[in-house]
Length: 392
Length: 179
Ligand code: SF4
Ligand code: SF4
Image 1: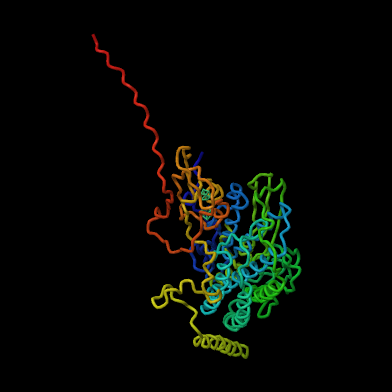
Image 2: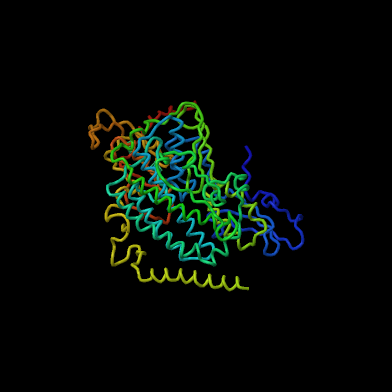
């Protein structure tokens, strides 16, 4: 067996997408990352610059590779769920929900109403927490420090609610195949209501603090434009797609967990301060989505069935029949799907994750061309990528 | 030209709006709590949103094993997705005094090694559910940082392995005196 090649063994021109001899006069290759404070993880981007202008940009991924898919072929279904939490580590509830949903589809399990409601509650809270992080750090990338503190103050409350619910703050292992790990504690929904009541004014505050700030709009509303056709061509999903003005939300189009019972709107980018599909539009969609999440949460608390065993349909052993399944949910960053092939054993034969961040990253080269170096950070931030999910 | 000045005005006014919000927050209650401040040692479990004393109810931090109750069934070792539990057992002799776990289950195995590597553990809680005697538990204890990574290997086993019987000594053949 030959030893695997390491990064240091690469030929110099293998590590770089752009060749020195192809460069024209005044052009330069610039490395951004992997340890760059605004790449939200370890992401390396290679820029071909001409002065201030970026001629071409090539993202290099793999610095956070943890071999999720191969690993999943060696552990049982229940054991995979903690690993799915670690894909998009700021939206863990959404990830495990997606995997549990796929597993249930494969086994033909119907979870009861209470479990569905609890899943909606946790998924929407997680969406708020995840968007708060995205918005806060986006402001930070642009140079606005204050909104970050406001966003994290609110996010902390959501994490506290989660810790009270299941004992963990970031990686929950909460959604199981066939149920959820813990029932809601007493008073939990009351405290969620208290949180929502004080959170709604914070959204308006965030708008005044950052969204409509002239400096912020000037910096974001005319860069990183994704026209609707390009967004569809690259199969973008989630807020990145809706920022381009396309009304597509998996919760509406392909409802799961009883999302069809809740009334909510799908906010889309309208190009208010510049062309449609700009960084500002994507940012704005996220803020408005939090408002819709609050709406869903209020309805979910109202409709929460008082009775029901959350472990009712949890199978003793997860041993699906041979077959394959693809299930998708609307994670905070877009459509997250799991494709599972089972050979009838206790461990899956193949698990494939379709991650929205990977797709969002692939469009980066297209939209970065012709922008300024200083805007690179704004464009990456507006795509809201989590490198844990790109590399898996 | 007019637009330029309008932009300028917009920038000033929208920044002033932001400043007003910040100013208002200046006179609000402090949100930041000092971690383990001397005046209020209890603040480490304080939360704005969760009622007092309820936050750590289900906290999943450090693992603990009540060794007296462990029957050595290896369920927890099997289920752990990162394989950070290592258990070895040996059969208790019939002649030994029968002992029982807290729920009345007889203990047939002597656990001579029960190691959990907390630096590998991913705090998933999966090992807690299958345990028949509820002896492996998550505790709300979270301050266990170490300088040396090897200190994270927690050895819970109390019993020592019975040393193997010494092999019978072979009698050396008496040297035959050469004639
Ligand atoms: S909590 Fe999870 S990772 Fe840690 S020992 Fe238990 S099963 Fe293993
Ligand atoms: S599952 Fe419980 S009883 Fe069985 S070996 Fe583990 S700790 Fe001991």
